[in-house]
Length: 219
Image (cartoon, rainbow, N blue to C red; front, side, top):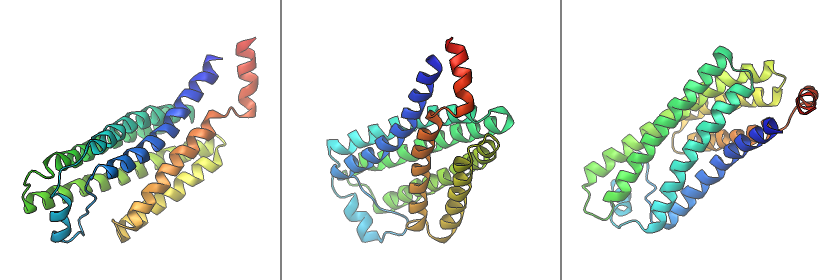
């Protein structure tokens, strides 16, 4: 029974990381959090940081940081559940790097939020915005590295949907990031989140060949 409970817990962390991240972004928007990119004109950047953020922005930021920790727990569990070994270690390492770089991107964004409405210089605001997006884009490639390690493990373990969908999302990330960072690139990031949620649910289920093992363990 502990085996089943453990899988359910980590699967819930995977789904929860997606839900809480999206909730954090939505709540942050309610608190006047700025959403500007490297392609935003100077006038938009100036207007975005002209007013202070509200409490909701910090509540959203808090949730986003929590979601990163939840993802890391899911990613390491998934790496082990799909077979571990060398590929599992590579996947876990990519997940750790993804977590660290994502946290850095969030910290830069929070720095901008803290300075918002306090007379932040336009040049500084633009530079930090570009840096924030550059670091964020780096997380897309780390996600791709994680998926490339997970894909062959999943296929070998008979989890073909997980494996081939990981390949498809990787291709989408790499292609759209090269074509458009602000539009198609952002859309591919949503595919990554959907993959996390779907894989969490799939890995929570015990395949038929594992049922016998669990039943023997419980006997």
